[in-house]
Length: 184
Ligand SMILES: [Mn+2]
Image (cartoon, rainbow, N blue to C red; front, side, top):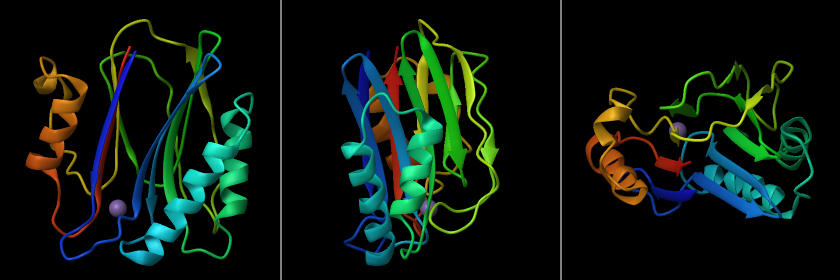
């Protein structure tokens, strides 16, 4: 498995309200992109709280439990959107609250977007589960990247180069932009 991520704050901001999180520990892989609502320092504060919570959580926890912890940690902040994938014991879990995007060259990953905001209110979380694919590229990206790109056009590029190209060619000027890739 190979991971890469790149992130940049929106034009005119130093603080980044997006976070890419990769945890690869004890045979469990967790990938998440968090987008603190809006941008700037307040968005960054919310994203930090989410990142810290995921970092500190036990690896055994399911996505249901992790989203619950993050939701609680973000109370009193502006809130955030988050899409996360977790691979453990040959099974993949996928879940999203809000509009962090997901693309995959592996078919059949059952990700459902749950409407709402972590730390504020959201509909009941739906976690999709399937056998973890053996091959393919998984991409999480915040809405600061325009979704008008083809994942297969980045096929020949390393995860690092593909993330860099997404930021260079598809980032929108008015929002933080983040891309996270895992090649299986
Ligand atoms: Mn955003």
